[in-house]
Amino acid sequence: MALLNQLEELAQEAARAADTKLTAPFAFSVAGLDHPHIYSMVQGLLDAGAQLIHIYDRNLDQANTLYQKFQTGEVVSELSQILHSEVDLIATSIVPSERGALGIQVLEHEKHFLSAKAPFTTMAQLHAAEEAVRRTGKKWAVFYSERLAVEAALLADNIVQEGLIGELFQLTGSGPHRLQAETRPDWFFDPLKNGGILCDIGSHQIEQLLHYARSKEAEVLHSKVANYAHPQYGAWQDFGDATLVTNTGVSQYFRVDWFTPDGLRVWGDGRTVLHGTNGFVELRKYTDVARSAEGNHLYIVTDQEEVYFSANGKIGIPYFRQLITDCQQGTESAMTQEHTFQAAALAIQAQEQAISLTKVGEKR
Image (cartoon, one colour):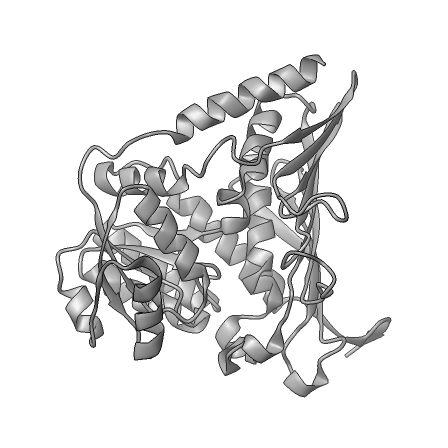
């Protein structure tokens, strides 16, 4: 079981890298709480040692709900109170189409910005953000949680970089989500506000391609979207897929949807398979269907053996500590700005050029 021993060593190495401490205080506020991703973002920043100062949302009930959850920070009634305060970073999960404009305000007030995905819904918003970063020198971070907050995904990176599966040549991914339509706000079903399914949840998949392949460029070869089962929501999409290839020749196929059945114990059976010239590793990120309600499962096959490994609770989530350090020291250990924006750009491109289907086998 030499491979299993290697995996244990890699997990311990990754855990040591994640177990770092802040060297200076770091303060943040939140503004715009329209998507629940803000809760994991706040939790991550607090766990990393940051201090929550202010909470703002145009819906006071949403702001108060977040305060009740964390019992820290002050709920304020105006965005300007946050913009003019002495904090290092402002985090948001405001409606996706509004994230770009908010981020520019934040940077112009000399603060770093952390957005939930998708950070933009149009290329114009992205280009404006790029200009704001160049002008201000502040960071525009995006929390791509399906890699950054999944221990199996973090360990998989070590597996690839150590060459345990040979040279990476393809990724396949699936990102199914449970809809729970009755809990969704109106903006969720408006493609102009949420950006469309590939721009939104597809951005997770594309970010993984760029990261695992260590590529700065990629091309969208083909993409499709559809509304197969929810005609009451008009142009909204419940399915999408895409094929991409990096400038280094690593290809990807992924599919995303809003069809997680109620019988599944978690919100989605997200999976990624990393295919190498000498083996492969499959990530079952959030569950192992009919076997385990825990996440962070890895199935690895090489030329010598096949093993199962659980990364659950063995590594931690280093992203937020790394991001804080980057903001304080001007480094790019959490994620480079180029990578952050390139993942968003490719997701928008996939969305914009997607073929739209009305039903299986029929083009619109």
